[in-house]
Amino acid sequence: MLEITIDRNSDQPLYAQIRDALQSIMEDGTLKAGRQLPTVNALAAQIGVTQSTIRRALEDLTKSGHIISQVGRGTFVRVPGEKEPDEPAAKAAGPKSQADPEFRAAARRVRNGITKSLETLLTLNQRSGLIDFTTGIPGADSVRAGILEEITAEALRKGHEQYQFCGNEPLGIMPLREVIAERYCRAGLEVHPDQVLITNGAQQGISLMALKTREQDRRFICETPCFTGVPNAFGALGNWIEHVPRDEEGPDMERLRHFSDGRQTSLYLCPAIHNPMGTDLSENRRVELVDWVQSQKVVVIADEIFNDLRVEHPGPKSLFSYLGPKKCVVVSSLSKSFMTSLRIGWLITKRNLVSQLGGLKRSLDLGCSPLMQGIVLALFTTGAYDEHLSQVTDFYRLRRDAALDALDRFMPREVTWTRPGGGFHIWFSLPQGYSSIVLYMMAIDHGVSFVPGPYMDIDHRFVNCGRLSYAQVDPDQIREGVELLAFAVRQLLESPPGDLGLSGLGDFL
Image (cartoon, rainbow, N blue to C red; front, side, top):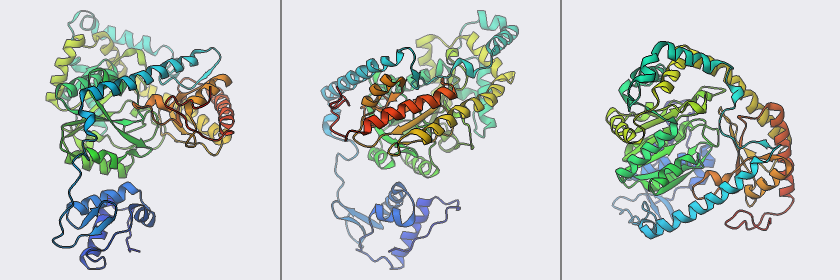
């Protein structure tokens, strides 16, 4: 067993500590040339870190020439003069057929067909009397009565002529861009108003980046599961969608490194209060991610739409603070934290890209409604938004805690779920081999609904998972709804798992 110790309180990343320790025992002869290293699993278990952290350390040692990997045999301390084995040519690019237009067209038809079927299935939640855990937008009771009237009156009082009679500005009215930039600066980021583009919700920011990605023939990678509007926007504009699975800590870095080929790439992530998991990018995963992005021609599209809905400990710093405007595009809006119907969002990145995206936006809508922008400006400048956040935090904490308490009390122990730091989504997992699509149909019969996992993935995986959204459900209904769902789960688990088939229904019907 190798003697490797780490200091979790050190400012040096864990992977770097492990890398340096291994390098030291190689150079002092403790680990001799030609000797095989323990497996990644064994090292992770011994040291008490994730497998991804071990892989990151070994990646550095491979690049520095200290170790060498041999397919089918393992990883060895490199013998001086030993040649690096040839890399398989298709490692980063994937199967050759994926580049064929006919292949992609056929695959897109399969993806779209299943998506439409799932959308049809989800109309079952429109039945009256259901406790509905599918809705991912804030409820009317999360906003103080009268606040919209107050900020609208304030906007009209201060900017009657500007908001009603002026021509649209494609980048957004400057006072609003200044206020948004100031709010980010107060959070510790360096943002100038010229780096802010006002959009019709975060969805338009995502769509503009989809247009730019297609225009530049950039590769697009999307973490999964994720908000379905992201792959829908990129796919509708002709982008082929690559995917990287995500767990509670963040994207799978081993999978992401398959794309280390130097190609221009756009990468979509929801780093904080992730939809649908509700969890944050972990510190270890953030270090790995930032290192990889800096080494590649990658721009990260960081979706921060839930950041203002944190209900406990401070979250991670924005990826913008680590990557800067050349490597990061932030998209956000008020649609989750305040009111969906205002349709005002923003995009933050480098100045020249904001200008280019503003040109694309001009061709789409000439610019966002000045009146809506004026209302949002009043929301920020009067302090009404910060007052709202202080109240809505308690609103969602109460509902999250009610959901987690009910899951702890009623859900069978075979089921697991995330514990979100904010927002209004919980991601749960059934044992492998059981279908959330079957569970959804059983749950509807019991009077409760949720979003089956395959709906949150471009290729409709995560069949055993589902999303619970408690934004529009009061605490008493949450407890009752989770109890009803747990009853349906117990019924599902009474039968052994089987082959679910492409539909995810197996022999249910």
